[in-house]
Image 1: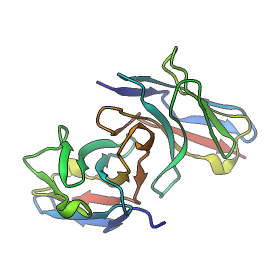
Image 2: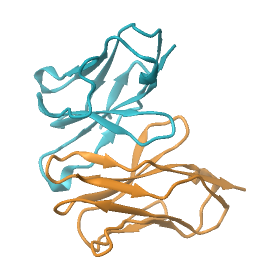
Image 3: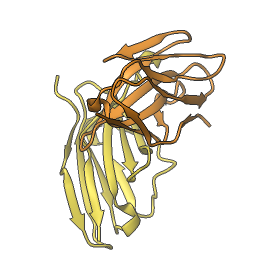
Image 4: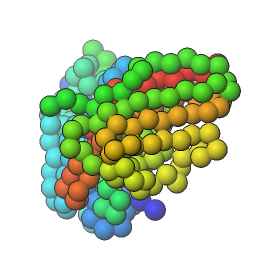
Amino acid sequence: GDSVTQMEGPVTLSEEAFLTINCTYTATGYPSLFWYVQYPGEGLQLLLKATKADDKGSNKGFEATYRKETTSFHLEKGSVQVSDSAVYFCALGNTGGFKTIFGAGTRLFVKA
Amino acid sequence: EAGVAQSPRYKIIEKRQSVAFWCNPISGHATLYWYQQILGQGPKLLIQFQNNGVVDDSQLPKDRFSAERLKGVDSTLKIQPAKLEDSAVYLCASSLGRDKLNTEAFFGQGTRLTVV
């Protein structure tokens, strides 16, 4: 069945460092791909999305490109801030049943 | 636009007791999901409704969990009897769910359940 695999955390970075969180997926068809973020004590929020191959989703300085050839959707940010500390979830929108399937999440700590 | 509403925010019960959670999705969203998120893990889909019909409940422990979505709007998730391992955050989400471009799920704040 469809699945998402993302790098294990936690990831600890200093402020202004470059961030990459790897995500790969297995799916039939052409799913939509998402990154959700969960800040401490809050619910899940959509960070960015891409609906077809080679699309780039971007928001708040974060970017991810839908790579069909490598079945990947890696999250990147050029300069992280302390306020980016959160758990990041890669997810896919299953085209068959329109359901969202999540990875296990990657916790990011950014220190000043 | 109002978001997904869930209640209660927190619940503490003893094992073998019953508990119910309520969810009101975004107006016009045909698809409603209940997810279970155990501490340190990603959300796991328990059940998915399309309007008032069940699309997927393959991971719902049906001996103790039940859910309904009467009239295709609000939904309730019940656990009876609760076990210690049911301690988790229960997330409700909704999406337009009509086509590939509308699979984006919008989440409520969740209900944190502690079973003691």
